[in-house]
Image (cartoon, rainbow, N blue to C red; front, side, top):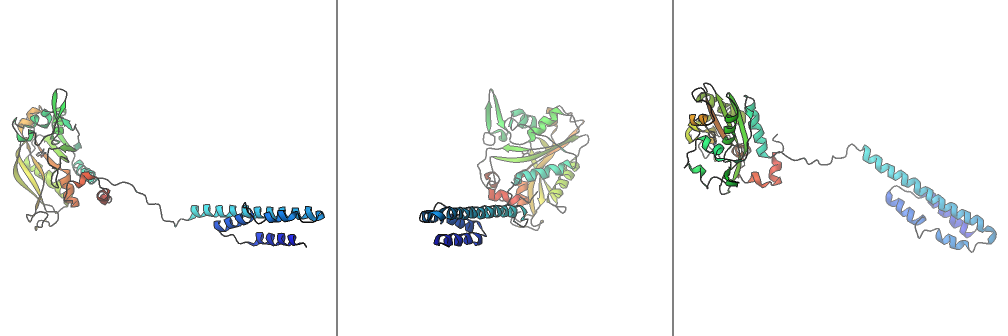
Amino acid sequence: MSDIQNKIEQLLNEVNTTPIQDASALETFRIKFLGSKNCLKPLFTELKNVPNEDKKKVGLQINELKNAAQTVFDKFKDQLSNETVDKEEIDFSRPGEPNTIGARHPISVIRKEIISIFERIGYGVSEGPEVEDDWHNFSALNFPEEHPARDMQDTFFVEAGDEEMALRTHTSSVQVRVMENSKPPIRTISPGRVYRNEAISARAHCFFHQVEGLFIDKDVSFADLKQTILFFAQEMFGKKTQIRLRPSYFPFTEPSAEVDVSCTICSGKGCNVCKYTGWLEILGCGMIDPNVLEAANIDPKEYSGFAFGMGIERIAQLKFRVNDLRLYSENDVRFLKQFKSAF
Ligand code: PHE
């Protein structure tokens, strides 16, 4: 056997025995036998020196070698790509892709909870506009002309054509609309965003959220109001929660009260959250002033009722122990993520 035939045989042997376990071994194989500078090329050059009578035979042998290399390459390429696909499809032990779904905003979480508590005792939900006229935000609610809440310092006024409108300062405005548009018995709560012209700090913001409630029927008494608030407080903060009513003043209710709950942290023993009083203020309430019923064409001799209003941020603050109001509107994802498991 001539020199060149020896080489061909050696290479053929190598083609058939080279171990190819992975993509990089396959690539090394391709470069060596099929690449642009493959090891078969010098054989073609050498072929010129082969005696004429052997040329055809040796030429064929080189071609066979080339074909064998191509066949081996194709076979392993197929095999390796199948293996990768198979692995991806059947490896159930691979950890799942992290699935980042959003979290509910803490204000939404608490709003939902407040609504669901009142829905359980027969309240419906009503909504109204955030840009209000003077009548619905103030006058119908028995605010005297010169009441300081109408002052520029508390209210954002908006010009809307000829009329001066305001960004509602409370959702009691929605209750006026409900009283105007429906007949007692009325049982409704109005959740929504309200605006007040306040300097932004940890304890105050120029907008926040409220849920206000309204109950009108025949013979509604202060005892009904107290029991409703107690039910709410115990559903929201736990069965052992106590309430305390302190006399207060609102233009639209008479008598009026502010309600405290026993401290959710120390249960009344005294801690720095309740400033060692054992109590935390959560809402304002009272019996609807007859003037307010009259303004909405409801006869105060036939009907009576109560109203209450609370800030959602305040309840959220007590539930989640957040002590800076500004966090609720900064939308820092690190803050928002913490409420993922709340609901
Ligand atoms: N509207 C009052 C406020 O915004 C809350 C309130 C509602 C008080 C109903 C009494 C009765 O502060």
